[in-house]
Structures are given as structure tokens and as C-alpha cells.
Length: 140
Image (cartoon, rainbow, N blue to C red):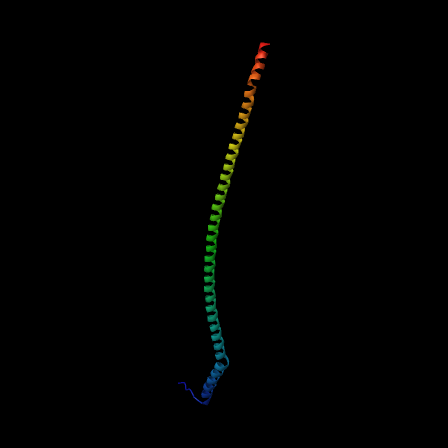
């Protein structure tokens, strides 16, 4: 059978191993854990900030789109108002022109009728002279 002697060197090796673990824990593992914890905290904070910024951007975008839609609706209303006003102005101008043309036509007809009447009166007075001349020409 195999015999195992347990002597003081085994105890020293175990103590040496435990002291090594404690030193490694103090010098390497704890600082690394602290750095990892800081990075996780920073990552969580940045994730929350990014979420907050994304929400804020969504709200601003929604407000912008709402204001843009309102502006578009106002512009459409103003375009319609201006279009109606332009149609009314065009209609008014056309009616004025038609009225003016009608008045011009009436004045022109009256002037022509007056000239015709003036010529008729002038010719009525000269009918006997013209008839005498025509008769004298026919007789000759």
C-alpha cells in the first residue's frame, strides 16, 4: 500500500496557497470587479440617457409634425381664401368691364341715332331742292 506522509510542508503549502489567494484577491480581483461595476453603472446610465434622449426626440418630432400639419392647414386655408378673393376680384372686374362696355354701346347707339336724326332733318329740308334737281336732270 501506498503511504502518504502528512508533514509540515503540506500545511505550509496550504497556508501559502491561501495567502496567495488573499493577495490576488486584494491586488487584482477586487480592483477588476470595481472597474467592471463602474463600467456597468456607466453603461446603465448611458442607456437610460439614450432612452430619455430618444423619448425627447420622439416628442420633439411629434410636436414638429403637429406644428407642420397646422401650418400646412393654415396655408391651405389662406390659399383657398386668396383663391376665392381672386375669383371675386376677377368677377368684379369682368362685371365692371361688361357694364362699361354696355354703357359705351348705349352711348354709341345714342350718338349714332342722333347723327342719323340730324342727317334726316338736314336731308328733309333739302328734299325739295334735290327732287327739283333730279326732275330737271330727268327732263333734260
